[in-house]
Image (cartoon, rainbow, N blue to C red; front, side, top):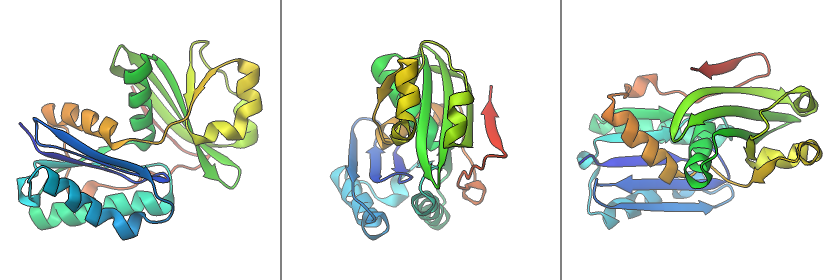
Length: 221
């Protein structure tokens, strides 16, 4: 069974998960502006709980944003450092997708819209459609807060993320379900197990943060 370390620091929550294929341990806590200071020690604490060394890892999974500029770069940098030094392959997952996958598994929601506060009047928006637990389509973009009201969403969509507060009035008018959630490394770990079974790994040099602007977007079908 694979040994997987999952790192997700794109939000105010520092989130880590580690699995040895039989047991999983995790850390998930909001620690304002302390990610850089505490991340490596927190990883070591989890490794000690399962009596694993870095040489035992089969893959490192990373939430690559979009989100906090500093937090996203931190996760990618730490992952690359460990991967290069120990020759460990990497799995990269959108942080917006991590949130959506968690909501899908918990509430069986088939249409999940993730809104993350991008600051300076902007929102990161991810639109994810599922068939049961299988992701069918995904798109993500950045837009200005005032542009949100011009968009149309399926009637059974659920909304999640700290960006929901920025468009609270619009969501109230749409009468949509709204959940609060930060990206959780437990959800990243589940997605990493799927990707690893399919051989969807990358070289650490190809790992890069996802930065979105209002003029470009990323789509998967």
